[in-house]
Image (cartoon, rainbow, N blue to C red; front, side, top):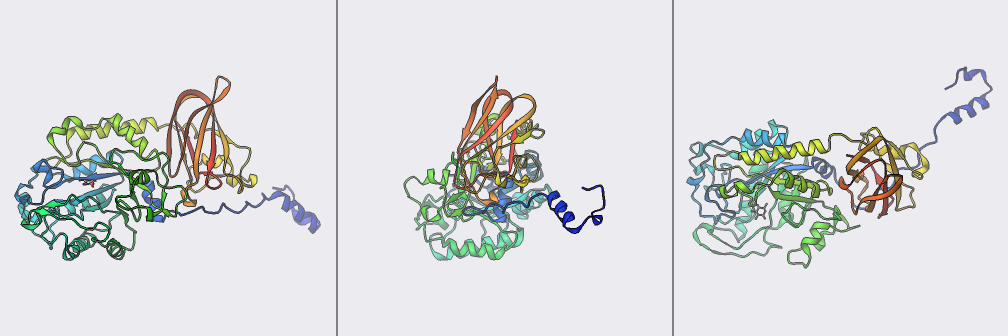
Length: 488
Ligand code: FUL
């Protein structure tokens, strides 16, 4: 900094020069706001897209909910190729895969020591095969995390409805965690339609949904079976992630990652809307997961080959799930051969190409960011922080405000169609209303707006040609922060 030797100056002058040359210390970092995500939840948010695999006797009976009296002999995929599933999923960009190891019909895809109603009794691989083992191994070999669905409702089991069934269910969970872990996500499905085979009783059995399963004990058991890495537990009501309230692929707008678990109980009026939108300023971080199938059904049916969602439909779902700060859990059901059908493969490929090409070139990467007010007017919190690759740096507004704005100047005018925004959710979810404006023909006007941002918001904006974009946070629960802004 100086061209000469400070030691030649009187001490007090040297001190003054040194003080003047140092940047002022940054103001204290913003206080976290409200409930915060755990490390495991943060990792889950960053996965963005996971795949669901529904495969069982239903694949061969053409049913969605097997009654529980299916003969294991019908389970006989002719060309099972789990690596084909996994390479298809990996190429489509999925980071994890969740397998229905047992659906409501009770047939287990692994040779369980606790039941005969399993692949062990099927002709496939002469009863020596293990689909759960194959999927687990192949998922990891393809760089994807492995998760499990184990239906609590079991229409095959004779004791379903009494407490011995709960022991059976927990024994199976134990088998899964001990033999196929680590399990990144555990899916506890709330569905229960009443009637079933139940070991030959063929009757309707209703359970007390709130108490029968004694979920707190089961959840504690999962935590004990796998303390690290922490399994993300899904159910209609958490504890780690919640249902999104529909199976159409649409997260709420707003979509709050926070909710009060006490408000979530079956039969509550408006429960699906509550799950869909969450609650601003609530006490628990429990984000919604968007589960939806690539076909009308969850299982493969030949009649639905012509109804596979198109790449455009999948892209729209991507925007209403990942683009609203949720994780997309897209179901792709293998067919009777034991392969992902050609039509599904083609659709997934074209979908991935669509995502990659739409979001290939971030026009903000070379932009300049400006703003009139930011925390302490210090570089650490300047608008430029939304353009660097570090998710832990962010633009921060002053501690006493719940609004703020920044502008981006692109290197040249370009046609834009999407603006993506990210909040540093480690410090809580804050933004509740924002607008995006652009300078078009010399005038600045609004080209889009939204409510929540969260982990990531992809906002389709009016297509305009511009070189100046303004992000205006108009309402927030606490001083707004943004870690990233991209423009496409
Ligand atoms: C629902 C189940 O009843 C469907 O069959 C499917 O497994 C879906 C993911 O969850 O509750």
